Image (cartoon, rainbow, N blue to C red; front, side):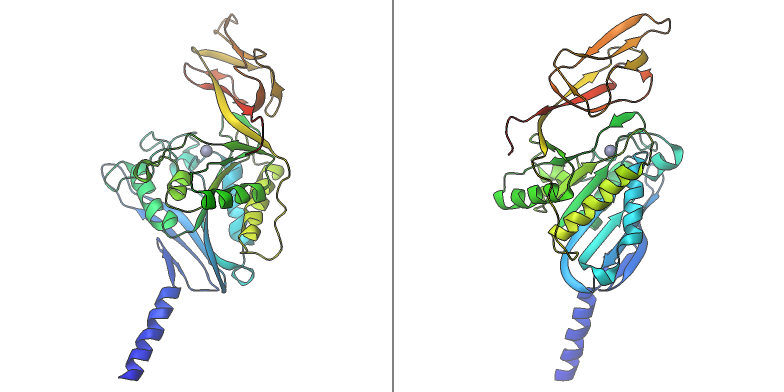
Length: 345
Ligand SMILES: [Zn+2]
């Protein structure tokens, strides 16, 4: 009898050591590939690739997700590189990697949205098991990835039409301890421009963004972006790969210490300039430039070359991104200007 109980306890602890995410499943020291299967409903099924890298030693579970916007290529390639690079033998804890949430966007080269239902795949969290494909996928990512992790990094990059300079987001939730950890994570990530997001949702059941979904569930998390306009530049990919690994060092999941960025530029607010009508856009500034309020940053003409909109900087700050293509219609973003915070938080 005693022996039977002992065997039961041992098998229970072995069971507890197995981590399953979608169809991927790994014991300590193992790496496993699989899919989060999103079943069909009113629209088709999809399957989101997932990789579990489980260190032989215990430690936290970190999720690294990219490709909610399937044409933000630098961020997707960065997670593909991490999948190759991360060795269970070198890691303490577990990394759950999701390189491409929005496969239809990637294969069909459709920016911003999932072409299956026309929805952004970073706006419908925590999702709905009975909704359209984006909502069902978001629901399963919440259950399978967010709830099984202690921390999350959501990676993005400028989309096909965005000429973007690298930056990260720090979104405090009002819990001093958690906010201190997420701040350390964003400093460890190392990008020199950090947006303080104070306007995120507060309701975990209407969290909208992936990182907010994790943050509102008590998991210190960050978002980072690098890449622009369909390119896969080594500098952008390296910034995201090294940033993720530095966060792992900070969390003591990899040996060595992270070197946090010193005196980054903190952005307290983003001011957007949008198109007022249909036409051809011509930029006058580049991503990363600092502009003065009122400065001309671009213009839109009709099909005959007559200027129909002069775009000026609504405030002084840094061009976080500017429209990268001539296409323009009413409501499209011309540029996002980051207003520099008077002092560091
Ligand atoms: Zn994105």
